[in-house]
Length: 267
Image (cartoon, rainbow, N blue to C red; front, top):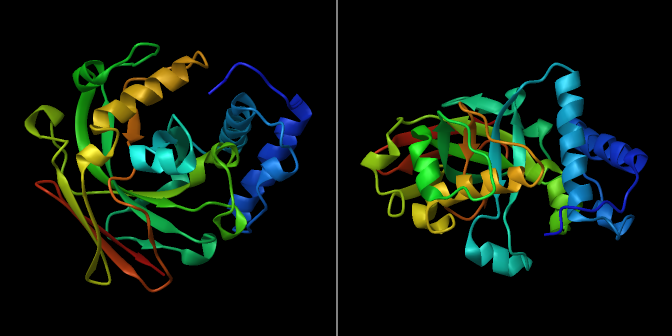
């Protein structure tokens, strides 16, 4: 990805940030923004995302973590991309384990089972690798991400997704914390149930071969912008399973091998 050039003006980036964020806040879908701005670069896309982040912070929202998306090799090949994408997590995205998710605040939600890392040392790219990540991890914890693309009928390209904060909308954490050195994160299994029926199963290796690779990649991508992952950052590493569609009235439960389970209801 060429992160170094802009094709859009500062005014266009600010206007697109407002447009895309309003789609999220009002739960109204929009057409993919590259239709109107086909010249948009990767740097433009991330600049729009960072502008949305600044808008939220200006209104008093806190950024409580980061997430990676498109972290399976198969999904990257399918989308024709070489690198996953990242997004930020705002405080109001957080839902307690066993809690209710208001479906009418979302457009077409899906859920993914993930492993989250909480760091205890800063990580700054370039050159961050798995060993650095494991050395800088306080604990890992199960997480369920609710993703919700703001683009109608899921018609989008990756630049539009990045500008839409990589489809971030809600997340649930729960289960048990663990030291990653005590786990084989590659073989750690997850089972996702909707209304008591198993819909997806997977293992940690689905995330770039090892979930810590995802955190390393995030630190390296942020490094390209001169940013770092501060100590104490909560990072969701990407879907272990395929994303499953959820509807109003659904109850979900995701079980993590040796780490308990997470549940929620879509109301």
